[in-house]
Image (cartoon, rainbow, N blue to C red; front, side, top):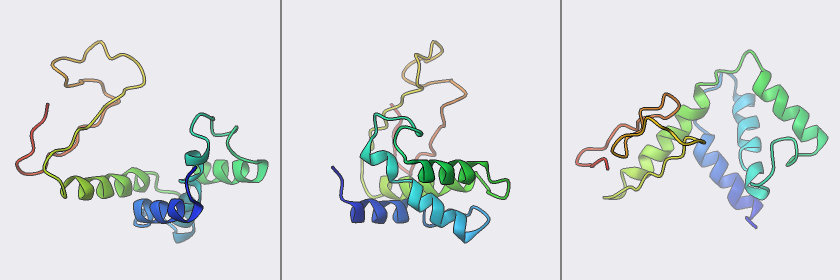
Length: 123
């Protein structure tokens, strides 16, 4: 089981720079992010009590939230980690078999292509 303090630190490091349109939304994201770590096999409703579930749905349904800020913060942190090492193995899972995958490069529209660091090789 993961330690709550480490989970909070991870969430703050990962999403603390998220620009969601309101600092309170960023704090809510930091609070929501580590919750799946405690029950990764569960769906969103199964892994939360009623109050957490309601707060989570309000967060995701908030029309004032800039949802692009969530992945951009995470991507920025991920790219920062990849620049610290020579080789990065990026395992991809589209969630279903992608029939259009050719030579280990997926052409699926759901998959993102990561910008390669200088000197990096794609497999």
